[in-house]
Image (cartoon, rainbow over all chains, first blue to last red; front, side):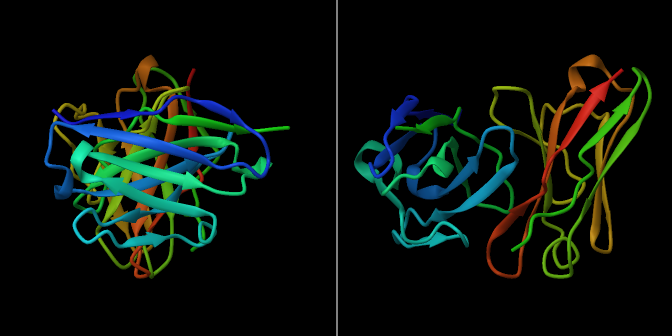
Length: 117
Length: 110
C-alpha cells in the first residue's frame, strides 16, 4: 500500500530556509507526479503546484513562485519542498500528495512549519 | 485562480441528510467532471471521499454521494453520524492546468 512519511515539524526564523521531505513507498515513485498542498492555521487547503517525477518539470501555482522549490531524489523515492526566505505567513502545515489523475487519493501526514523570531 | 465557494458551516442531526455546495466557474467546476471532495478531521490529513463528481473510492461509505449541475457541485451525506463531523473541501481541476480547492465547510452533527 502507498505510504508517505513526511519530515518532522520545525521552528524557523524569518529569512531562513526549510526543506520538507516526503518519503514514499508502496508504488513506483515515477508513476505519480507529486503535488504539494498548504494549510495555514485555521485555514483551508491551497494547491501549491506539482512536479513531474519523470521529467523533473515543476509547475507552481500563483502565489508560490520564486521562493518555493520542488525537487526529488528517485534513488530514495523522496520528494522535497524547499521554501527560501521564510516569512511569518509561511507558517502552515504542508502536505505532499502523489497523483496520476485529477484527484488526490493519497496524502502525507503533514509537516508543520512555524516561522517566528 | 480564485478558491471555489463553499458555505462556511452546515449542521444536521444524526440520521438526517445534509448537502454541501461548491460553486466555481466555467473554467473549473463547469468545464470538467473532475470535482473531488475531501474530509478532514482536526489534526489529520484530508481523506478523499468523492472523485470525478460522483465516484466513491473503495472503503468510503455509500452514505456519501456527489453530483454536479453547471458550475456548482454538491456533496450529500445521508444518515448523518457523529463521526461525520469534520471539515469538508471540494476541489476541481481547471483550464489553467491546475487545481483549486474550496474554502472548506465545517459540518456539525448536533
